[in-house]
Length: 346
Image (cartoon, rainbow, N blue to C red; front, side, top):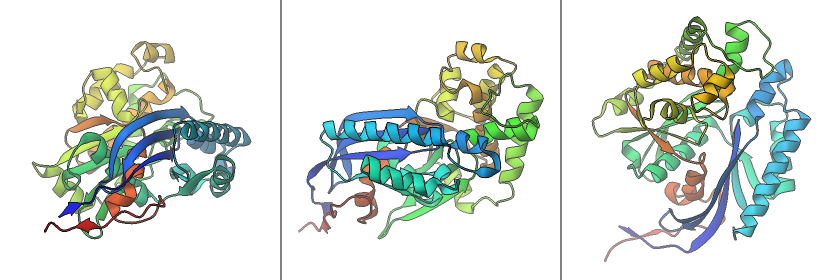
């Protein structure tokens, strides 16, 4: 079976995450589901999740973060248009918008004011887009891939089995970097979370946070497929994300793109008892306030799922997977163009 080459369309995809808002503008072959040229790949820090966590029982996005988020998205949409992106632009809104009381209202404002066809997606859908991203960015065959996406509000580890339709398998958890940061402040230290720095973090505090996350995750049994695929010699565990993701922190401190639980522990040890300035001096220039909770989270997930070595793959959120989603999954969901059907060889 060969696939007809589709027409080339310039698209803009937005990943509106819990801590970062990401955009990629690219030329997409709508028949092959391939990115043929990247015109622009940018992100901006908008701390939606920590803003909601700091609101306590209100569980609401503040007016300040709403204005900031809408301003960023309007600006990015303007930049996409200047790159020739053909509307409608597609966007996914993830964990924080599923839980915030005014998350739906915010996403509605994004559609009206920024002209982005943004929608709140389930964690399972987020996992599917993430797996497509990891496959596209790493060049790994998707059936042999375990894709790990760890964001500000949650994590997903996923795999896609080819078929008609493809089958998505996902192991998900309600723990992200901002959630771990908040847990350190509130549940380990007993203070009110006001987005204050976590540093310096003592060894006992880090150990307690790892145990707390691990115990919480243990309440949900590990799906058998995770262990089976993870143990397969041909499988590849890929952790993907941008400049502030958990895997990037380990790379900055260890120089390693292939990372084990021991590497996470060694990186964590370097940051214990360190002030903000000392952690910045180690090379962690962004989100240094929560760098230790990030690695506590990474350690706990590895322990919970008994994961082996992973390879870090830089990616701008899940934008790449969103750009090719409809062709890869055989649906018309995020983009108006209908993918052409496969053509049998004569």
